[in-house]
Image (tube, rainbow, N blue to C red; front, side):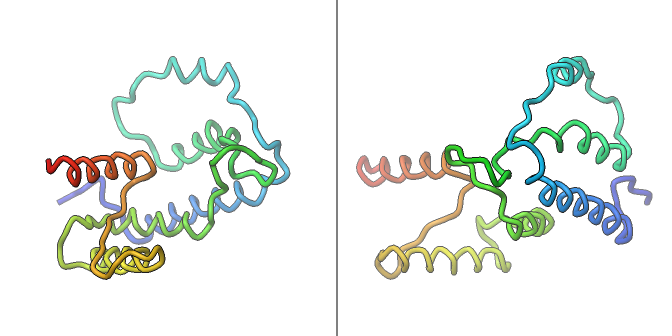
Length: 162
């Protein structure tokens, strides 16, 4: 069976090394760039005119487009002279940790696999750090908005018995 979406180990490594090269170049040259570069109006206009593609795109071409259309115009929070609100600089270790998590793509909703038990252990550490009683639990969500929504749902359940 020919699967055009299947990648060989060699292809994964080649593409991955290209991505790592882009990341390393971006992060190490960022200090020499302005802290923020607004997206040029002509690029905004050009992007607004692009039609949805009818077929896939060569991955090297895709990386080149990212290098041209995205890399030069970051949000700014990765720059060492960016002193703004709550957006922190990227932690290099987290870039690779996210890549590993995306590759393994675990669901911690249940199941007898490593990620579930690691989540249990880390939530146990957090409950100990903040002084909650033994047996307390928790879960990880995608960010602050989901954490707030989850907390509101828990409070509603506890107080209203819903």
